[in-house]
Amino acid sequence: MSRALVTGAAGFIGSHLCDALLARGDDVLGVDCFTDNYSPARKRANLIDALAAGLEFRRLDLSCDPLDPVLKGIDVVYHLAGQPGVRSSWGDDFNAYARRNLLATQRLLEATLRAAGPRFVFASSSSVYGNTGDQPAQESDRPAPLSPYGLTKAACEELVAVYRRVHGLSAVSLRYFTAYGPRQRPEMAFASFIRAVLSSRALHVLGDGHQTRDFTYVTDAVAATIAAAELGAEPVYNISGGTSSTLLGAITQIEQLTEQSALISFSPSARGDAYRTSADLTAAERDLGYGPKVSLREGLALQIHAAKSEPVELAEAVA
Ligand code: NAD
Image (tube, rainbow, N blue to C red; front, side, top):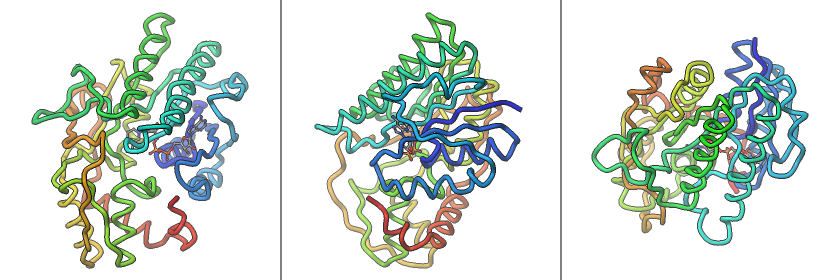
């Protein structure tokens, strides 16, 4: 049994990671400061299963609170806390990205170093690549982010690499490609599409809908994250669902699964959104034994089922 620290434990992916670590018998300390990128009530609800399964939780802001106490006795740090989202990273909101991504990661790396020993796993993003063109992105490709968010993730990866190179920190960064599933952040495409279809409202597609994403079901991302803590030898791995779909293709599947038609309104594409994302998974397959287990159709069915059983007050708590 090992003792894990999960940052961003109340978030979408972090809460699923806590559930998986607890299910396999790990001792888990989760931290989160319930930032306002979406409803804190949702984040509290995300923690319910993990708390029932024995999660120890502390409310703490990585960008300013003392961190040494939470690193005591930790074997693995899973650093998932951060300010996600491409579209809101322009303009004055960049302050939150600088603080919650760059500063928070730097402070956590310093504390991890002082704790001398823990493995460090960092949640990076496919947004470091920008457009991947016709080829699946390989980890060795030169990062070319299209948004300030992507830039902060690329910079955090570099920061992790500096601590690895100079201080010998045992660390790995994972480039997640668009995760989805129950508890997905409410502003993300599938969550908002499913909400709209279930309540017979128009759903908003930014761009022409033909943009493609390599969607990753959340439990696949979590399995890869735990495997990377144990087996990852490279500094960086792509983690994706392994098959791409257009947004319109995914909407058709949502219509079939809900047996309801979608009313679609189109708006201009958002600044910083890549047109195509696609991952080369060779390194993750080879080193982590990774293989996505959940198809897009199965994953969407699970997310729709969870959305249908969500309490009304949470379904409305999208801000
Ligand atoms: P999320 O917003 O649901 O979770 C992030 C959590 O971090 C939130 O609960 C927030 O309150 C917490 N947090 C932020 N700043 C903090 C700080 N300073 N101190 C303590 N807690 C803080 O986001 P998510 O979708 O679960 O993403 C998790 C991580 O994975 C993020 O780092 C994100 O950038 C990365 N990522 C996500 C995706 C995706 O598709 N969801 C894709 C690529 C990368």
